[in-house]
Image 1 (spheres, each protein chain N blue to C red):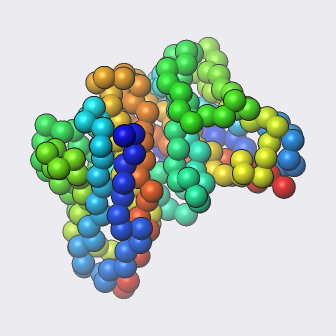
Image 2: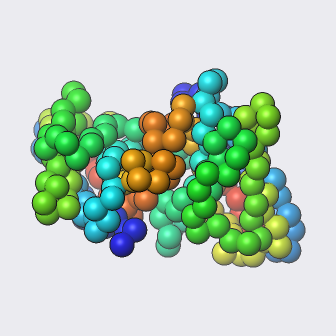
Image 3: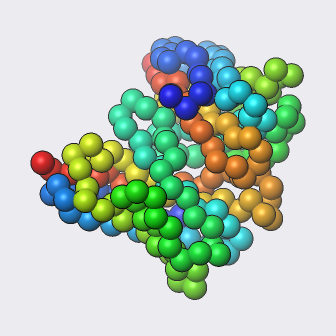
Amino acid sequence: DSGVTQTPKHLITATGQRVTLRCSPRSGDLSVYWYQQSLDQGLQFLIQYYNGEERAKGNILERFSAQQFPDLHSELNLSSLELGDSALYFCASSAGAGETQYFGPGTRLLVL
Amino acid sequence: QQQVKQSPQSLIVQKGGIPIINCAYENTAFDYFPWYQQFPGKGPALLIAIRPDVSEKKEGRFTISFNKSAKQFSLHIMDSQPGDSATYFCAASSVGSSNTGKLIFGQGTTLQVKP
């Protein structure tokens, strides 16, 4: 158990819908990262927050957004969902930028 | 230039064998190179990591070899066991220059260790 929690574990929804994925980092970690894992693209970095502020952005679609709250938990919002958004979404946390990243168990999203 | 290329895509070895997984990168700003292990249905878990100021690092049965001039690094698993059967990912980040820690992952290697 990495200490990073993600909810929900599974999510099934329809195209065009909007979903919110939630992540609670390990106690004391200030940095939260979101990654997408799909069969064709592998593990792709989406976005990073550090102590409430956006620190880095990767290949994140405009339909996707994220935020980190004062209690340091983070949410990833996916809107106007497409079939191709079906993937595993992982959250990771670290004490600071560049420290070891600990991954959560992931949320499996299926868009039908 | 942000890519990390990993090979082979899959690997089958007998118990006790030494599987070797290789990764290559282009971006000379990368300064942190971790390896992650992932079992089906689980998130990636850090195995071992290296920084470019050393050429080799060992932790238990896992060894990273790092060749800075060739921009390559590899994972060796000594005395492999069936429980090591998993997908392995190499990654890289440029912590020093970007201060973000975002990881760029290789495509992954599926390892099967036969009893």
